[in-house]
Image (cartoon, rainbow, N blue to C red):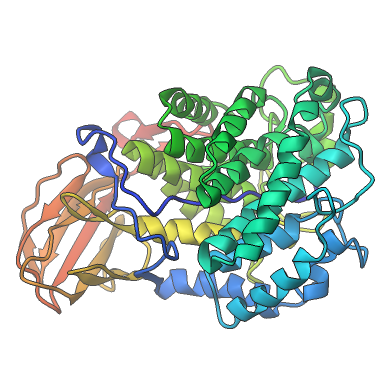
Length: 523
Ligand SMILES: [Zn+2]
């Protein structure tokens, strides 16, 4: 976002199975969980655990600034003055949602107290923040959009908190906030408003379209199907990428995927798949396997005046944003889970390793890096975006954890190679990076069974597109495996202590700036 914030979040449905035609499902679909925390049964380990802890510690005990209750709630109390208080609920909502879905230390107690205070700041019409902003088409401007953005993020955070706490008071507050947002929908949908907000960057129209996510979450919590119609009516208002704030745009796409999960409307899926395909074949898709803070900087046909929005909000050199990486990653994972197409998982993984992890600061924050031709340089402005990216980055971890090991009809799928301890009904395993000395261009992982039963399901290990070949060792002995639909399946009566190792020979390729890869033989 602008020198700014914005963030998005999205929740997942964990409470039902979704099958999208087994033939297509080649790679992905999984059994949904039981409605508990999204990461139940999957704990981060090794390097991933260190990354999670780094940001959790930042949120709970970091300094400069410190996330004290007063500081977090400043965007709804409107005091003390704090950067971006006009995006009311943006920081506080994200803080709530991120730690609700991935608790750490005493975060549950802290959130209880925080929520109790936050509720007191709701205005009589359901909104949070500046009370005298009038939502009439002829008056709506950037400050209204800032409030909508923050209130939308807050509604997401409240509902993610409700998902875990089942606190009826919170649902009541969320419902009132939802009614406020629905109430201003008609005035915001006026074409004159759309026109007026062109070029407003992080205070532009994406502040409105990002509401789809919160409306879907509210439907899940209340069962009110009218919310789905309201959310659907917003889709046509999403403008093309053009000069556009990536985080707001991608948050809208994530919201549409959540909507599709509810409605099963193929047109909604097609809308997102088409938008994603156009993005990754455009100059807006970067060498980090991800996006910059703004779309349009590298596009042909944009003049200096067109770019002024970006320069004004993001600086003259290209800059990334933790929120944009988190969104691209999460959107890729959503698309993979809901279509079974491995190409989306490959994109998400590339973003994870090259964009998202790269973006995390040693302080645990996420934020901005300036990308110049000779390389990445420190941001001239505030780099650690504690008002959005730090929480939104943390919010991506549950999505990652949810995707590493999944249960499908045909067995336990290992789809991402992040270090975790996973426990299912009949099988448990530790997934680790290989500790073997490997040849150059080789990379590997090991799976050690920590729980097993005689009828434990088979294990399917993804063989990624970046691997030229995959060699398997079972308890130190090579085994020959077939690859089918992107996975190799190992079936046996698993015993505790069994160890499956996989060594990938990485494919050597030259990747062009537009993401195109040339195989070695083409070099
Ligand atoms: Zn951000």
